[in-house]
Image 1 (cartoon, rainbow, N blue to C red):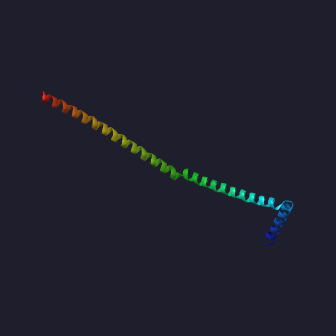
Image 2 (cartoon, one colour):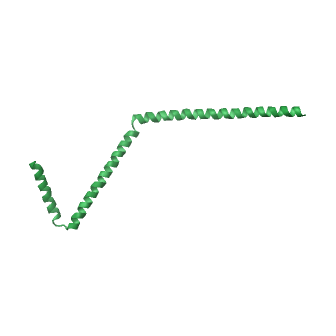
Image 3 (cartoon, rainbow, N blue to C red):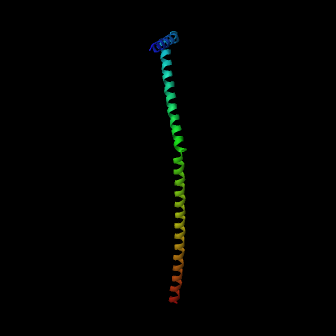
Length: 111
């Protein structure tokens, strides 16, 4: 407990020596600047912690597994869409051929 009192006295004496030659405005400006620098430092540290947390989430094994799984699902969906498109084109061509055949038969009956 004596150490904390001695430290407080040392700190107080240091402040008195530092600020005795300065005006109240200068002392106030120094305190404001010190507080603002501390605020900026804490804000930067918080942002850095957030980035580290985000990086660990993005580069984690769970995310890699989920990304690979999503890619496989998208590839399967793309294949299904391609098959459906081919099937539609084939059905349209078959219908066109049937309609042309029916039109020819109709013309042959008319003559």
